[in-house]
Length: 390
Ligand SMILES: Cc1ncc(COP(=O)(O)O)c(C=O)c1O
Image (cartoon, rainbow, N blue to C red; front, side, top):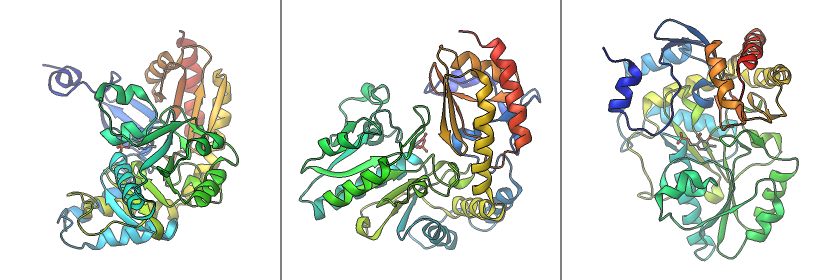
């Protein structure tokens, strides 16, 4: 009989390199493979499972909604969709919401909003300034917006209208601004490239520059949003608000859903401008409402900040040359090319971590992780270090 990896090789397109493990179930911060082996999950579906695996409140909300109404299309109103939009606005800033299915789609929405706003208010300006190393998704526009040519180069010709500058360099944004510029689009912490936080004053400076030049500030909070950094949204650490914010990943606790929030200034879509068959369907919205409710009820924002400090301390013992991050979004960078052997050794030690490149390992565990689980991860990492040579 073929194994799951053999069947995957035969029937799934080769879009990514997978680790040699097949997960079949999970509970809290633990996941189990086909052989029943237990792992502590510090990746959480890449910053998705905010409440861990099989959270009873999410499972109950999804079950209840599945037994009531799974989908109707956006030709009609549904209560969970309106309730979710209302909740997201209450947690963030005065805005209206477009609900979709993923981070890339939320960012496509933001890009379309910016272009329409530019054609209405800035004489057809359409260029968006983004940063080198950023990641905004895998659609054609979002790989182009993202500043990593390895994801966009194979797909030439790319859409026009994106200008890349160094992250944490306000002067570079100022120099790149022209009459064609309509928006600046940033991650408050660059996640996929290896957890690079905004330097003190950077986002505040970009906000001021956007106000001065009448540009939209788009913040991609797909990875940083919803408690990951120890605040509901990462921009709240900086005392600013964006004009447009995108969310996805953790929002549905594992059920696919994305959101694009636009402040009144940027809220320029008219009927017919945009849409999505599945976007914000009742099932996904019911899951998201349950996630938000549990985060609030269980005080997981403060817990994320506290556990983030604990994780930072735990990572001090693994011999990294640099530790970076905010809240429960952390990375350890090794001087040597040790990240991938380390990831493999951790897996063998029953710990799931994410090597983003040869040098850097990312940790984005569920927000419900406990101090005892972080201590267990530390012990596994210390033993993995012994096996992880270059
Ligand atoms: C900051 C950021 N934006 C957008 C995306 C794309 O999200 P999705 O994979 O749901 O399209 C990601 C995914 O890693 C991300 O980290």
